[in-house]
Amino acid sequence: MSPKHVVFKKVSRDKSVAIYMAKRDFVDHCDFVDPVDGVILIDPVQLKGKKLYVMLSCTFWYGHQDMDVMGVAFKRELFLVTRQVYPELQDKEKLTHTKIQQKLLQKLGDNSFPFFFEFPDNLPCSVALQPGPSDVGKKCAVEFEVKAFCGENQEEKIDKQSSVRLTIRKIQFSPENSKLVPVADTTFEFLMSEKPLHVKLSLPKETFYHGEPVKVNAEITNSSSRSIKDISVSVEQVTNVVLYSNDKYVKSVAKEETDDSVPSGTSLKKQYTLYPQLAHNKDRRGLALDGRLKHEDTNLASSSIVKQEVLKEVQGILVSYKVVLRMIASGEVSLEVPFRLMHPKPEPAKLGDSDEMVFEDFKRAYLKGVVYGDDEESPTEA
Image (tube, rainbow, N blue to C red; front, top):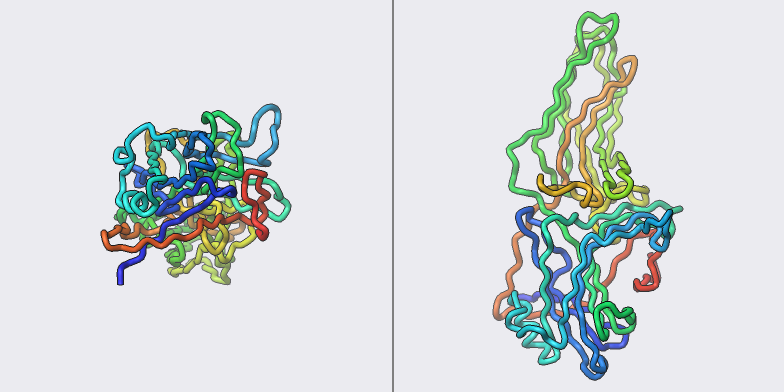
């Protein structure tokens, strides 16, 4: 039995245009980004002599979609490129870059046309902040979209009946295993205490995968005259909205509060286990998620990896993680170490000559609490 390769498709409301894509997630490998490619199927009779265009866009949303405050729209196009697909400006062969495009063109016939885009290397990855119950109509997100539409020219107002919009995601996977072991080591001095409190916090590795428990090693040597109590360990997500506002959100996504204590003149060496998962943080306002997808389809946002030469300001939203150890010694003292939370790099799927293509309707997924505009196909259930 031949292996099956899923191809996603979406058809315009008037059935004049359909778009076919082999994947929805496109990987930023840091030194290059997967190109966006697919095939458009048209009904020339329905198009009535109009041209067909395909657009790739990256948009940063912040606040209400339809609001303008002091002349500043809460929407900014970070990247936008449009290509004419029909009538053809180049031979199909020159625009066909992948084996899946070749197979689709053979299967769909003469009224199918390939498209191909390359990302610039300075764009952010897909990320969205989870809205709270009172945030109806608001969203803060970086989104990517492929749109096919027809018109006399590309500036013409788009007819929703004869256009197709697909939200895609730009994602990053964990780089090769780093030999770096995160460690923080410090000494706290107290008034009226001759000797200090020494605290060491470490993780077994720099990168943890989504769903994987985070093992935290704590070593506390209390030579001070103070008694240490109320020890807690947490994973905190730090989200910087660096475009427009430079807002910073720090959210605990996993926490263990203990009765552990370290009386004066004693020490404690212990490993704690934390589970930073979206399943334990549903409906929490302001958490950063990977892309604008439903809870069951997504996870906490992956750590952002930004190239040194890229301006952080154009990244829209940056996400990082840290483990924080807190304790009470007359007042609170704390120590933290950074780490990465990411997906492992999967094996690339290859399409063989005998592989069978299976078409699946491209189902749009939504973030709970967001109200979408007229040009979105709003869900009946959020």
